Image (cartoon, rainbow, N blue to C red; front, side, top):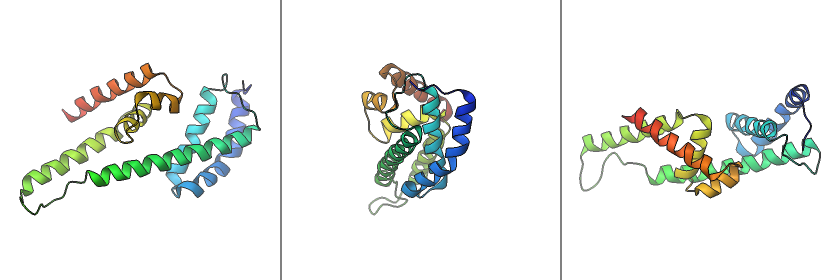
Length: 167
């Protein structure tokens, strides 16, 4: 269990945020993605502060967590990129050039991705892990330290919201 109050948490955040972002950047090569990873680690630390047991120094724990999250993010981005490349809709086909149909497919695909990006953060992460990364609800629950019921609930919520957004 970590005994950390808001003041010491804030001090830790201010001291470690930039060094951790720089560390994550070495893995990800993207400033925004690096900041996302570091923020996720700090949110996790705060949310789990009463349950976490850290066997090393808090700073070592933070660097290890950022490294692991960065590697996870790289893996997810690789799978997502592969998925997007494999599902790219060509504008023209050799056998049937139906430009209007192909355009409608491309517009719909773009609309779906935009709608997924509008989902609440937790919901979006879970949806992408399930649909883009192909993880099972159990795998997602284990990775995010959540129950399978929470994953099911978030997926149900995502589908409802996407249905509303897409009409």
